Image (cartoon, rainbow, N blue to C red; front, side, top):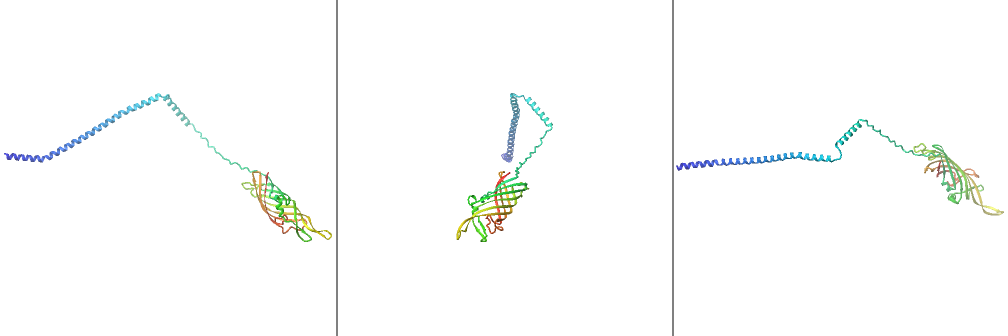
Length: 329
Protein backbone atom coordinates (compact mmCIF):
# COMPACT_ATOMS: atom_id res chain seq x y z
CA UNK A 1 0.00 0.00 0.00
CA UNK A 2 2.80 2.26 0.87
CA UNK A 3 4.41 1.50 -2.45
CA UNK A 4 1.26 2.34 -4.45
CA UNK A 5 0.71 5.59 -2.57
CA UNK A 6 4.33 6.56 -3.09
CA UNK A 7 3.99 5.99 -6.82
CA UNK A 8 0.83 8.01 -6.96
CA UNK A 9 2.54 10.89 -5.24
CA UNK A 10 5.47 10.63 -7.55
CA UNK A 11 3.26 10.70 -10.64
CA UNK A 12 1.29 13.58 -9.26
CA UNK A 13 4.48 15.52 -8.54
CA UNK A 14 5.77 14.92 -12.06
CA UNK A 15 2.50 16.13 -13.56
CA UNK A 16 2.59 19.28 -11.47
CA UNK A 17 6.18 19.90 -12.42
CA UNK A 18 5.30 19.47 -16.08
CA UNK A 19 2.26 21.75 -15.90
CA UNK A 20 3.91 24.48 -13.81
CA UNK A 21 5.50 26.41 -16.76
CA UNK A 22 2.18 26.54 -18.61
CA UNK A 23 0.50 27.95 -15.55
CA UNK A 24 3.15 30.67 -15.11
CA UNK A 25 3.07 31.71 -18.70
CA UNK A 26 -0.72 32.08 -18.69
CA UNK A 27 -0.61 34.35 -15.69
CA UNK A 28 2.00 36.63 -17.35
CA UNK A 29 -0.09 37.16 -20.46
CA UNK A 30 -3.15 38.02 -18.44
CA UNK A 31 -1.21 40.62 -16.44
CA UNK A 32 0.12 42.24 -19.64
CA UNK A 33 -3.33 42.45 -21.14
CA UNK A 34 -4.64 44.06 -18.00
CA UNK A 35 -1.86 46.67 -18.12
CA UNK A 36 -2.63 47.49 -21.77
CA UNK A 37 -6.25 47.90 -20.92
CA UNK A 38 -5.39 50.30 -18.12
CA UNK A 39 -3.29 52.42 -20.51
CA UNK A 40 -6.09 52.58 -23.05
CA UNK A 41 -8.51 53.63 -20.38
CA UNK A 42 -6.13 56.39 -19.26
CA UNK A 43 -5.76 57.63 -22.89
CA UNK A 44 -9.51 57.64 -23.31
CA UNK A 45 -9.86 59.68 -20.12
CA UNK A 46 -7.34 62.21 -21.45
CA UNK A 47 -9.21 62.55 -24.74
CA UNK A 48 -12.47 63.02 -22.93
CA UNK A 49 -10.92 65.73 -20.78
CA UNK A 50 -9.56 67.48 -23.92
CA UNK A 51 -12.95 67.29 -25.58
CA UNK A 52 -14.56 68.73 -22.51
CA UNK A 53 -12.05 71.62 -22.53
CA UNK A 54 -12.81 72.40 -26.17
CA UNK A 55 -16.51 72.34 -25.55
CA UNK A 56 -16.04 74.80 -22.70
CA UNK A 57 -13.98 77.09 -24.99
CA UNK A 58 -16.65 76.97 -27.67
CA UNK A 59 -19.21 77.88 -25.10
CA UNK A 60 -17.03 80.80 -23.87
CA UNK A 61 -16.34 82.40 -27.32
CA UNK A 62 -19.93 83.46 -28.07
CA UNK A 63 -19.98 85.13 -24.69
CA UNK A 64 -16.76 87.08 -25.47
CA UNK A 65 -18.18 88.06 -28.86
CA UNK A 66 -21.33 89.33 -27.23
CA UNK A 67 -19.23 91.35 -24.78
CA UNK A 68 -17.23 92.98 -27.61
CA UNK A 69 -20.36 93.73 -29.61
CA UNK A 70 -21.89 95.35 -26.56
CA UNK A 71 -18.73 97.49 -26.13
CA UNK A 72 -18.86 98.60 -29.79
CA UNK A 73 -22.56 99.37 -29.47
CA UNK A 74 -21.95 101.46 -26.36
CA UNK A 75 -19.17 103.40 -28.14
CA UNK A 76 -21.43 104.07 -31.12
CA UNK A 77 -24.19 105.25 -28.80
CA UNK A 78 -21.72 107.59 -27.05
CA UNK A 79 -20.82 109.32 -30.37
CA UNK A 80 -22.42 112.64 -31.37
CA UNK A 81 -23.50 111.66 -34.90
CA UNK A 82 -26.23 109.47 -36.21
CA UNK A 83 -24.94 106.52 -38.27
CA UNK A 84 -28.06 106.65 -40.38
CA UNK A 85 -27.29 110.20 -41.41
CA UNK A 86 -23.76 109.19 -42.32
CA UNK A 87 -25.12 106.35 -44.40
CA UNK A 88 -27.49 108.79 -46.11
CA UNK A 89 -24.62 111.16 -46.94
CA UNK A 90 -22.55 108.31 -48.32
CA UNK A 91 -25.46 107.29 -50.54
CA UNK A 92 -25.81 110.89 -51.77
CA UNK A 93 -22.11 111.01 -52.63
CA UNK A 94 -22.43 107.73 -54.51
CA UNK A 95 -25.33 109.11 -56.53
CA UNK A 96 -23.35 112.27 -57.38
CA UNK A 97 -20.41 110.18 -58.50
CA UNK A 98 -22.68 108.15 -60.75
CA UNK A 99 -24.09 111.34 -62.31
CA UNK A 100 -20.61 112.74 -62.93
CA UNK A 101 -19.47 109.49 -64.49
CA UNK A 102 -22.47 109.53 -66.81
CA UNK A 103 -21.58 113.03 -68.05
CA UNK A 104 -18.88 113.21 -70.78
CA UNK A 105 -15.60 114.41 -69.37
CA UNK A 106 -14.03 117.17 -71.43
CA UNK A 107 -10.30 116.63 -71.64
CA UNK A 108 -8.51 119.94 -72.17
CA UNK A 109 -6.38 119.99 -75.27
CA UNK A 110 -2.68 120.04 -74.62
CA UNK A 111 -1.32 123.50 -75.14
CA UNK A 112 1.65 123.61 -77.48
CA UNK A 113 4.33 125.93 -76.18
CA UNK A 114 6.35 127.43 -78.98
CA UNK A 115 9.71 128.74 -77.82
CA UNK A 116 10.80 131.50 -80.11
CA UNK A 117 14.43 132.35 -80.29
CA UNK A 118 15.32 135.90 -79.52
CA UNK A 119 16.20 137.53 -82.83
CA UNK A 120 19.78 138.61 -83.12
CA UNK A 121 19.91 142.34 -83.59
CA UNK A 122 22.27 143.22 -86.40
CA UNK A 123 22.52 146.99 -86.71
CA UNK A 124 22.45 148.33 -90.23
CA UNK A 125 25.21 150.89 -90.66
CA UNK A 126 25.75 152.81 -93.87
CA UNK A 127 28.99 154.71 -93.26
CA UNK A 128 32.14 154.91 -91.18
CA UNK A 129 34.64 157.62 -90.30
CA UNK A 130 38.16 156.31 -89.64
CA UNK A 131 41.44 157.69 -88.27
CA UNK A 132 44.82 156.07 -88.98
CA UNK A 133 46.87 156.43 -85.75
CA UNK A 134 50.02 154.89 -87.30
CA UNK A 135 50.41 157.74 -89.77
CA UNK A 136 50.44 160.19 -86.88
CA UNK A 137 53.96 158.89 -86.18
CA UNK A 138 54.92 160.15 -89.67
CA UNK A 139 53.51 163.58 -88.95
CA UNK A 140 50.48 162.86 -91.16
CA UNK A 141 46.87 163.27 -90.17
CA UNK A 142 44.91 160.70 -92.20
CA UNK A 143 41.12 160.77 -92.00
CA UNK A 144 38.92 158.57 -94.20
CA UNK A 145 35.22 158.32 -94.94
CA UNK A 146 33.53 155.12 -96.14
CA UNK A 147 30.06 154.98 -97.67
CA UNK A 148 28.06 151.83 -98.41
CA UNK A 149 26.65 151.51 -101.92
CA UNK A 150 25.34 147.95 -101.67
CA UNK A 151 25.50 145.29 -98.90
CA UNK A 152 28.78 143.99 -100.35
CA UNK A 153 30.21 147.16 -101.89
CA UNK A 154 31.38 150.47 -100.50
CA UNK A 155 33.61 153.36 -101.45
CA UNK A 156 36.32 154.82 -99.24
CA UNK A 157 38.14 158.11 -99.64
CA UNK A 158 40.97 159.23 -97.36
CA UNK A 159 42.54 162.67 -97.04
CA UNK A 160 46.05 163.26 -95.72
CA UNK A 161 47.66 166.39 -94.32
CA UNK A 162 51.40 166.24 -93.48
CA UNK A 163 53.64 168.41 -91.39
CA UNK A 164 56.73 166.48 -90.29
CA UNK A 165 59.85 167.78 -88.50
CA UNK A 166 62.49 166.55 -86.08
CA UNK A 167 60.39 167.82 -83.22
CA UNK A 168 57.28 166.10 -81.88
CA UNK A 169 56.05 162.55 -82.48
CA UNK A 170 57.40 162.51 -86.06
CA UNK A 171 61.02 162.84 -84.88
CA UNK A 172 61.92 159.16 -85.40
CA UNK A 173 60.39 158.99 -88.87
CA UNK A 174 61.88 162.29 -90.04
CA UNK A 175 65.36 161.53 -88.65
CA UNK A 176 65.53 158.28 -90.65
CA UNK A 177 64.85 160.02 -93.96
CA UNK A 178 67.67 160.47 -96.44
CA UNK A 179 67.35 163.71 -98.46
CA UNK A 180 69.30 164.43 -101.66
CA UNK A 181 68.97 166.66 -104.71
CA UNK A 182 70.32 166.33 -108.23
CA UNK A 183 73.21 168.73 -108.95
CA UNK A 184 73.30 169.61 -112.63
CA UNK A 185 76.86 170.92 -112.52
CA UNK A 186 78.24 167.67 -111.11
CA UNK A 187 75.56 165.49 -112.75
CA UNK A 188 75.03 163.66 -109.46
CA UNK A 189 73.08 163.63 -106.22
CA UNK A 190 74.11 165.67 -103.19
CA UNK A 191 72.70 165.16 -99.74
CA UNK A 192 71.27 167.86 -97.58
CA UNK A 193 69.77 168.19 -94.12
CA UNK A 194 66.00 168.30 -94.11
CA UNK A 195 64.11 170.76 -91.98
CA UNK A 196 60.44 170.15 -92.66
CA UNK A 197 58.10 168.15 -94.88
CA UNK A 198 54.64 169.42 -95.69
CA UNK A 199 51.97 168.30 -98.10
CA UNK A 200 48.65 166.67 -98.71
CA UNK A 201 47.32 163.51 -100.29
CA UNK A 202 44.27 161.52 -101.26
CA UNK A 203 43.61 157.77 -101.26
CA UNK A 204 40.60 156.16 -102.99
CA UNK A 205 39.44 152.57 -102.44
CA UNK A 206 36.58 150.45 -103.74
CA UNK A 207 35.89 147.83 -101.07
CA UNK A 208 34.24 144.48 -101.78
CA UNK A 209 33.00 142.80 -98.57
CA UNK A 210 33.49 139.05 -98.89
CA UNK A 211 31.11 137.86 -96.14
CA UNK A 212 28.07 139.94 -97.02
CA UNK A 213 26.05 136.81 -97.95
CA UNK A 214 27.30 134.80 -94.97
CA UNK A 215 24.76 133.93 -92.18
CA UNK A 216 26.67 136.23 -89.84
CA UNK A 217 25.75 139.07 -92.23
CA UNK A 218 29.05 140.90 -91.98
CA UNK A 219 28.04 143.34 -94.63
CA UNK A 220 29.47 146.77 -95.40
CA UNK A 221 30.82 148.80 -93.75
CA UNK A 222 32.36 146.10 -91.52
CA UNK A 223 33.66 142.59 -92.02
CA UNK A 224 36.27 141.01 -94.29
CA UNK A 225 36.99 142.98 -97.46
CA UNK A 226 39.32 143.25 -100.44
CA UNK A 227 39.95 146.59 -102.10
CA UNK A 228 41.93 148.06 -105.00
CA UNK A 229 43.29 151.49 -104.23
CA UNK A 230 45.04 154.46 -105.84
CA UNK A 231 46.99 157.11 -103.97
CA UNK A 232 48.40 160.52 -104.79
CA UNK A 233 50.54 162.73 -102.55
CA UNK A 234 52.06 166.14 -103.17
CA UNK A 235 54.93 166.94 -100.83
CA UNK A 236 57.21 169.91 -100.27
CA UNK A 237 60.57 169.23 -98.61
CA UNK A 238 62.63 172.10 -97.20
CA UNK A 239 66.25 171.76 -96.07
CA UNK A 240 69.74 173.24 -95.90
CA UNK A 241 73.00 172.30 -97.55
CA UNK A 242 76.50 173.76 -97.51
CA UNK A 243 78.08 175.06 -100.70
CA UNK A 244 81.34 176.76 -101.59
CA UNK A 245 80.50 180.20 -102.92
CA UNK A 246 82.60 183.20 -104.03
CA UNK A 247 81.44 185.96 -101.74
CA UNK A 248 83.98 188.49 -103.09
CA UNK A 249 86.25 188.45 -106.08
CA UNK A 250 88.87 185.91 -105.26
CA UNK A 251 87.33 185.04 -101.89
CA UNK A 252 85.50 181.75 -101.42
CA UNK A 253 83.50 180.71 -98.38
CA UNK A 254 81.28 177.80 -97.35
CA UNK A 255 77.79 179.15 -96.94
CA UNK A 256 74.46 177.60 -95.90
CA UNK A 257 71.85 177.49 -98.60
CA UNK A 258 68.20 176.56 -98.44
CA UNK A 259 66.70 174.07 -100.84
CA UNK A 260 63.05 173.41 -101.56
CA UNK A 261 61.99 170.26 -103.41
CA UNK A 262 58.54 169.43 -104.72
CA UNK A 263 57.74 165.73 -104.78
CA UNK A 264 54.82 163.95 -106.44
CA UNK A 265 53.97 160.39 -105.33
CA UNK A 266 51.73 158.01 -107.29
CA UNK A 267 50.75 154.57 -106.00
CA UNK A 268 48.30 151.83 -106.81
CA UNK A 269 47.71 148.38 -105.34
CA UNK A 270 45.42 145.97 -103.53
CA UNK A 271 44.79 145.46 -99.82
CA UNK A 272 42.95 142.85 -97.76
CA UNK A 273 41.44 143.93 -94.47
CA UNK A 274 38.88 143.21 -91.81
CA UNK A 275 36.79 145.67 -89.85
CA UNK A 276 35.71 144.50 -86.43
CA UNK A 277 32.87 146.31 -84.61
CA UNK A 278 33.55 147.31 -81.03
CA UNK A 279 30.77 148.17 -78.53
CA UNK A 280 28.29 148.46 -81.46
CA UNK A 281 29.56 151.97 -82.17
CA UNK A 282 33.31 151.83 -82.70
CA UNK A 283 35.12 149.83 -85.38
CA UNK A 284 38.74 148.73 -85.77
CA UNK A 285 40.22 148.17 -89.24
CA UNK A 286 43.23 145.88 -89.75
CA UNK A 287 44.62 145.81 -93.29
CA UNK A 288 47.66 144.68 -95.29
CA UNK A 289 48.60 144.54 -98.95
CA UNK A 290 51.03 145.80 -101.57
CA UNK A 291 51.59 148.87 -103.77
CA UNK A 292 53.50 149.92 -106.83
CA UNK A 293 54.87 153.32 -105.87
CA UNK A 294 56.36 155.95 -108.18
CA UNK A 295 57.98 159.14 -106.89
CA UNK A 296 59.12 162.12 -109.00
CA UNK A 297 60.65 165.47 -108.15
CA UNK A 298 59.31 168.34 -110.19
CA UNK A 299 62.75 169.61 -111.29
CA UNK A 300 64.04 166.16 -112.25
CA UNK A 301 63.41 163.91 -115.20
CA UNK A 302 61.97 160.48 -114.53
CA UNK A 303 61.16 158.72 -111.31
CA UNK A 304 63.56 158.35 -108.43
CA UNK A 305 65.98 155.43 -108.28
CA UNK A 306 68.04 153.61 -105.68
CA UNK A 307 66.10 155.01 -102.75
CA UNK A 308 65.52 153.27 -99.44
CA UNK A 309 62.13 151.55 -99.26
CA UNK A 310 61.21 153.49 -96.11
CA UNK A 311 62.16 156.82 -97.69
CA UNK A 312 59.41 159.26 -98.62
CA UNK A 313 60.65 159.42 -102.25
CA UNK A 314 60.98 155.64 -102.81
CA UNK A 315 59.95 154.20 -106.18
CA UNK A 316 59.16 150.50 -106.55
CA UNK A 317 57.02 147.76 -105.04
CA UNK A 318 56.36 148.19 -101.35
CA UNK A 319 54.22 146.46 -98.71
CA UNK A 320 51.32 148.23 -97.07
CA UNK A 321 49.97 147.52 -93.59
CA UNK A 322 48.24 149.46 -90.89
CA UNK A 323 45.43 149.89 -88.45
CA UNK A 324 42.61 152.41 -88.25
CA UNK A 325 39.93 153.12 -85.68
CA UNK A 326 36.70 154.99 -86.08
CA UNK A 327 32.95 155.19 -85.57
CA UNK A 328 30.02 153.61 -87.42
CA UNK A 329 27.04 155.60 -88.55
